[in-house]
Length: 178
Image (cartoon, rainbow, N blue to C red; front, side, top):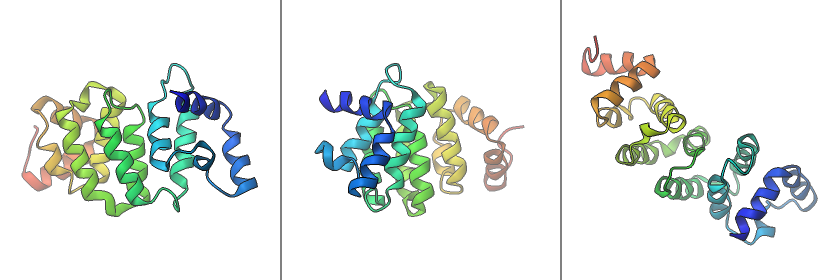
């Protein structure tokens, strides 16, 4: 798709974001003729074998930092679309955590997304799984309902990855793991 090629060029020349915004004072998506949602989803779809992950991270962060454009509603739509992608995008959980940091009122929505990720067996990708566990940690106590839906081996893994979750779970539900 043409937008993916264009985004690869933009990611490789990230300074373009800064120059365009400083000259025109409008976000990049205006010249791309795409919506903010389409731009952020397309950035997540870039094949990391064709572009440096660090540059894609910077590009997504630049987008999310534009709070006037990337409102909690827009980020909600983006996250919804990202969770539906197959395979799940590498930066999915990073974006979810950033969105929650900017808009804590998304907690309930994000908790629902986490439940959907269990069905997609999120633990099969180490990077996404680690982000999932970190997100559960940030969403305590709401995330306890998500954690108890995990298969036993994944629950044990999550509690080992994040001892804070184990302490909280023990306090809420009694001793889970000896």
